[in-house]
Length: 629
Image 1 (tube, rainbow, N blue to C red):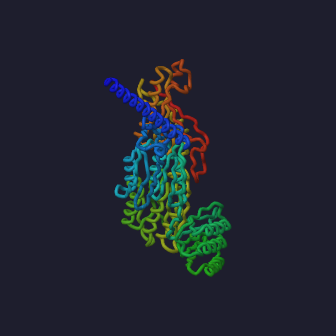
Image 2 (cartoon, one colour):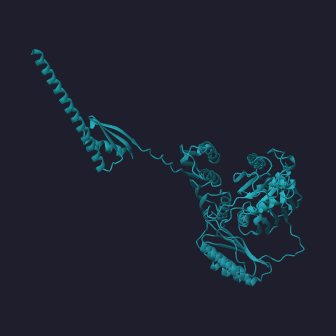
Image 3 (cartoon, rainbow, N blue to C red):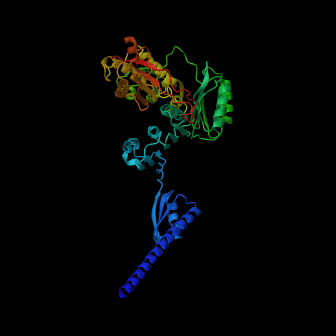
């Protein structure tokens, strides 16, 4: 009886425990389901359908891939509003973000008389040290301000060519600002004259790499002219200016119109500059030219406010007096007139004279009369200093009764001769005559200004120099096409041979390389591709490598001959593009060749402001030479 009561109690407690366990399990399951459903519904309402929700007891796990970190945090916050935030387990991932875009690389280069500064951002792949070395060479190491920063990204297309071209351009521009970006260069600069501006634009146009867009803004400020000089003469066969200066475009037009009315041909040069002695300069010049035309011949010279008019010998005295009187009353007050009517001389009298001649080869001869031994030694030394000690031959004799200013006139004549490529100076007691050829379009003005300043008021001189474009050190350069044709003529006479199976140029071809180098040194900056080709014998990969090595050897030989090759490239094409059949020995020899080809960018690739001509072809006629095995 007692055992049965104990058993009943045990069974009762066991049953109660089982009921409690079942109830607890049911409660947990209910909580899990309610938590999971509640969190999922809340996330769905906010559009976070990517999130996966799983309840495990009191814990709620969130998984899935969030678009970004902000949305992941929002999902956690949303779940925390349904269940205790401590119960939320974060198993979510975040989508990988795209790599950070490379920055925009750009550089600003400023240069003036005080030095050079460079600032901006460049890729680490750019050779910064080499660039700074070039800037130091331009301006001096102590005058370069380096504010460059670097970023570890690859160079964008066109960056290296643009940056290299910008440095080369800055070497030619002592006062400029250059902006560089990938494939784009913008240049703002100041030149000394319109002619210098034209030369700069020509040089930069020739040196522009293919595919680079260049914008030019080169200003040409007015030069300072001192003394402010003008000389107009009317001869038996022609009339025109030896020198012409004006202070404004309107004044230049007024002066040139007066010259045309006096018989000068159209197209006379007149430099617009600073330094005019009075705003009525053009009125005075116009009045003087009209007076000279009425007289019928001679010359009129201006040096600032001093005017010297020399009539042609034999002019009627009464006419001369009347015209000069009218001129004196018509000139603005600031001008002083000196007029001279030379007496006709006996042509057989043979006036004393000193003659200096300069040949196109640079040889100088001094002949005629000098006043004493000291002047002969001085003239000889002066000429040797100007033209070279081995270029001067002196054969002048010493005579008495020469004018007191004879040394000044002789040395002034030699100074004028030094500004010509070839010519003659004749010094006489009453005049100095300068004739010859020059590659400087302003040489006539420079010589007239020099003589006016050194000879003084009232002295007569005659300047008749001719500008020859082929003598101009920049504009006289042959065109790229002419250079290509000249190379073609050379390689038509000889071949560039290589040692068998090697990239070493055979000694028999060195004379051909010398001739090609001589041509290229006169061509300036041209874009040229040295192309190598082989025949089809051997493996294609080996042929391609050999052709590249041989093209590079030719380029190296040109560099060894001091040819500027910054705009040249060497490229091997292997057995590509044969010019003859590879089935015969003659055909294979023809295919083993080096070609020199001009690089012409496609139209639109290179935009060069202020340039009159652009190319719309991508390849020129090739110049070919053959290489031996």
